[in-house]
Length: 216
Image (cartoon, rainbow, N blue to C red; front, side):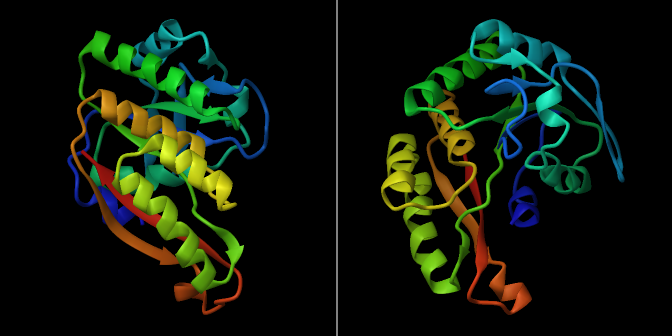
């Protein structure tokens, strides 16, 4: 769903990438503050100024490159970004599972950093939706989560994912993003596209759901 979403927006020179931590290495909120990510379509530098500002604005965010060494949730977004935008910087942030209060606290630090530096940024929250349920069941569960995102309701999303046992790996990153977008003045949310892996593979019994949404 990445291509469908990115094709609809203007990508600025800095992109904050927030994703879940699958491997569990490093700090709970790990920010890579310097260096370059090497991709087949070219190298992508880190926006050191903004990355360090986020760490300065909230004690939750820690400078940590080790947490990113074996994580894939952010790099999967980069080919789409590179296709639609040349010459941008990133701020990579990966998160362990955390409470809703921590999601809000982190968002406040990110917003303070963005506001202080006064530069346009794109916030990208990376997540798969339901994992390894049937196509029909995944669609039902994922629509519940998508409805919360469309309402720009971070608490509703967080609680719905828990109560309905939705295996959405990036619920924390999306919750943080929603809190950030609210503080930065977002007024609407649009579902661009939803599909499951079964619509490509043909296996409708064990699918993964994917959704692309734009908050603005």
